[in-house]
Amino acid sequence: MSTKTYGTIKTFVQSKLDLQEENFITASELLTYCEEAVNFCEGEIHKLNIEDQYFVACTNIRMVAGQKFYALPTNMYANKILRVVYTNGTNVYDVKRMTRRQRFEDKEITDTTDGSTNYYRYMLVNNDPNVGTQLELSPRAAETSSQITTTGSTTSGSKIISSLASTSGIVAGHFISGTGIPTGARVESVDSSTQITISAAASATGVGVTLTVAEPRLVVWFIRRANVPAASSDIVDFPEFWNFIAQHMIVECLAKELGNPRLPREQEKLKELRAQVLETLSNMVPDQEDKIETDVSSYIDQNLEGFNQYGF
Image (cartoon, rainbow, N blue to C red; front, top):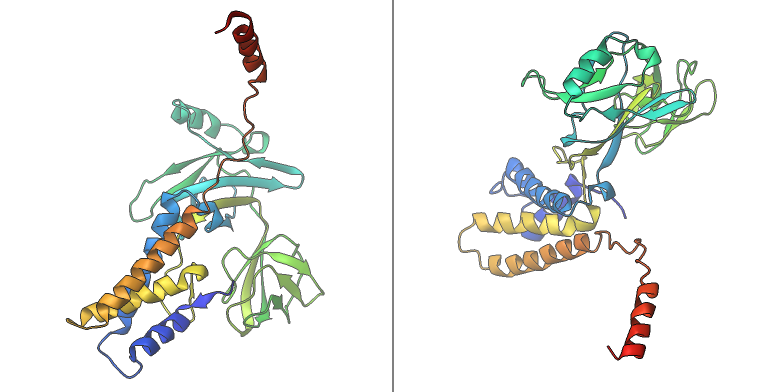
């Protein structure tokens, strides 16, 4: 299913309402109406507990020797961490969250040990509302993740980065970031000494773009927030529900004009599309048919024998 940009949906709404040359509805109002519809879809997804079908994301946390506090992804939804995975060569394990009643005592004991000989664990702490929730590693990092900086050329819509100043130290699986590089993108392959292929197409064209490539020593898998657009080129989440989002925008625009005769008809259409959204999402809820039924045949057979012999 093709993605939809906010610009595409906005143009559709303006065309339906003949608003191309009008300023009755401001740009900020249109964005607000779009955000309302996106938030509705997001809320229903969380209500049905099917976030993993829409919002699973991952990001790299660069470990720094001696550091214990690390910022969480800025687009994380309600601090919902799915997994924290540590990788160092063949040593790969799930970094457990400290949840026991004695976790505070455990943390103090663990913090006094050497991280190179103990598995890392973590807690979520919020020491400063200006900083927000952070991941506290226990024990504090005993190592620093490798990271290199280089430059290259990107092309919008392409996964290839060319004209790299250097590919030395770049390995498939490393995270890559920079202007126009989607969040969470990784290196898929090193094609030559000047070219690599990444896991997601660049969203902008640039020459001499500064790129940061980091090894995935500590990776956080989490539930992200729905993408709320701020510009015409921004992608709107839920491509299968773009018509509901557009219809919500249409209804809100019409509602601003008191007495508009089109409003009741468009409200009824929105109601139908809303029902379709809810039905579609409900059908995505696991049906639990993967469970094995209890074998009660022996119990039934014994009772049937009793019935045949005694008549009850």
